[in-house]
Length: 527
Image 1 (cartoon, one colour):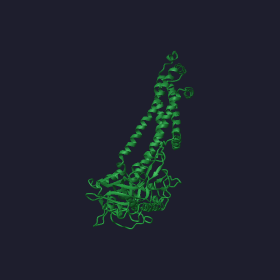
Image 2 (tube, rainbow, N blue to C red):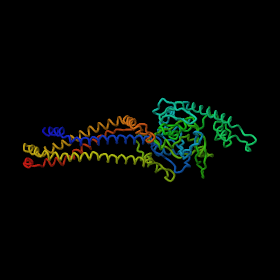
Image 3 (tube, rainbow, N blue to C red):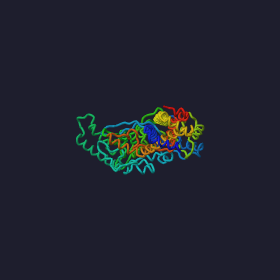
């Protein structure tokens, strides 16, 4: 009983120990916050990576692809059918995206992916990152009348103008679709009429017999004829008010940019037409192009994807690239995305498929293999941060060590009196070990509560800091998350608290042993 009384007395009167308690508290709180944020980032990143890459990716080495993906999917099911939940073929090829903004053509290098909208949902979570609710339920490359929004949409319209489309990053695009397309076409036709009035055709003096170049270009953009087809001499009738080109889903970062005021400006929106140029599958390849209509935007909040990926129907891409055998009608694909059943070991299925298919023709890997370097970098960063932050608690441990040695020196006579009254060496040692345990438990407990409260309110705190500093603390344009993602792992919190308490107890061992080893007579004669 006397040991508890002395521990409590030292804890109340030794205010110098408060510094050690605060060090332990800050170390525990910081480690909990850092691990929670890093776990949230890692989970969100892996979830978004996995939305594009299925559990296993079966692909060819070149851009020419392999024939008859249906037959290959049957062979894959023969090898590992019990483990497979769904599959879908894809065609992936580098391309150049071109669109008009402010009267100028803007090019963007992209990765063009042909997908099968009927089976894509069976192999991944592509649909949940689209901006139209109907497409999130069932993907279709058709332009919707309206209703486009983001997952955290606000009730503001993305207004279109001759200079472009402006709005906040989370702006709801409820006036997009066919409504926006008709407004754009009407505006272009008005521009053509104005250009024709200001620049009438030149007759006689112009030896080439051509209209003004600018008026001709404006007329070509707004005519009821596909402008890109017209250049090839194909006068196919096309009414942009009632028809659309082949549908296209565009990464949202390709359609927006942030201006100097921090506002997001839409360059293009659903309903706008763009041009894609890409190589054919022949040898040697040649460049082909076609016009597409944006039907939706893809927003995974991963810059690597949102700023580079463009999705089109696989059948149309196969036709344009010459990936359809003219004699047999067999189609080609560059990869097959394979989704496994829950609980199946992806590495085991990957190894089984590698043994069944020749490695010189096919590359078979899990989605973790494809993103191994990025995932390893995140894990290494988390480990290094934990080591560095744990040093804060180690510093607190050295503080406890120094304080306890000082207490032993100050209380030498008291220790001698206790021993002369019958206290054992183990009892004296227990006083200091209990004192160290109390300091560690108090600091770790308060730190745990502070860390959890900080995590639960981290986005409110970030918003408050943004208001105080006048600049965005957590910029979505950099991190591609609208909110700071956090995940609290009970096991991680447990080992952080236990480690802090353990360090405090270990720091008190040497002073406790020294106190226990004091001879009563020598202790009473001290000073």
